[in-house]
Each structure stands twice: as C-alpha cells, then as structure tokens.
Length: 213
Image (cartoon, rainbow, N blue to C red; front, side, top):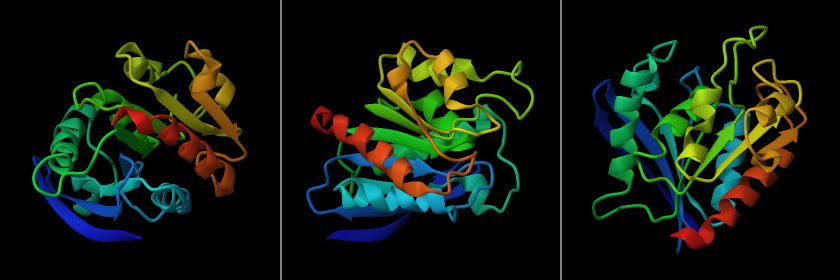
C-alpha cells in the first residue's frame, strides 16, 4: 500500500512538480525525472516508477520547472541544475522528508542532470535510463565526462541502454566506464518500449543499495 501526493517546489525557473508515491516503510527514495520532452507521459518512465513503487521504494516523479512552464527544450545545464537542486533538497527535508538511501534517476536529459548533481546532493546511487552519450550520428560530441561524474565521486552508477539507441549503444557506453557491469543492455532504441527488462534492471540496481540508508 502506498500514498500519493503532489509536492510543488519553487525554483529559480518557477515551480516544479513532484508526484510522490510513498509505500509504508519505504526502503528508500528514487527521484525520477523526464527527458528533453519535459513530460512525464512516457511508457518507459511510468513502468519504472510503478515497478519501483511495487518493490517498496518511494518514488518522486518530477516534472522539472521548465517542463511545467511548457518549454519545448531544456535550459542549459547550469540553470537546469540550479532549478533541480532545490527540488531534491525539499523532498529530503521537513516533516514529510523522504527516506534514504537516495537514488537520482532520469531518462536522457534527466539522466545527465542526475549525474551532474549526484555528488552535491549526497546521492547513494544514480540510475540512468537511455543516457544520451552523443547526438545521433555525432560520436565525436561526447558527454562521457558527465556520465563518469558519479563514479569519480565514488557513487554507484547503473545505465540501462537500448541496443539500438542512436544516442549511444550499450557497447559505446561501456567503453567510457571502467566496469562493464555498470551497463545493462536491453532491446530498444532511445525510448525502450519493451519495458519488462528495463524495470527488472532498475529494480536490481536500486535493491542493491537498500542497505545504505
């Protein structure tokens, strides 16, 4: 059994919305956010949210401020991060604070934000869904420096990547990390439509962090 509530958080870019599902005696918290669409309607994201709640995790499903405002593209990393930080901090403070361990997660653009901010937010893990390693057809424009930030800070990282993702295949992502075990390849493209293996990999990773609270 879980409860659901909407938490609105003021940020430098306006209000952000966190849709919080909290099971009784939650095992920890996953803060999950969207990609560059700014919407929370993707079947892959919904499947991961539901699967983690069913596994006993509190999930804050966050529509970032720029998405709430209806912007069609995310802002640059610095203003995006400045608006993301207060959302996570708000969820982890006050009377209704969500429990640790804290896992930051997101799809694509949201995965980048999670990697960039994990250290400053004291995250216990980072779960990336479809990390956009490079723009399609442009492998020379790499975002591997962002991907490696959690690992460099000693924070457990896991990436679930579609085997035909034009933003980077599982093999390309593994090549940028020290340990191939950081990456699970599943059938799919940048949007993973067969969600069973995606949810299974996500649950396995967060469950491995459950004793860090």
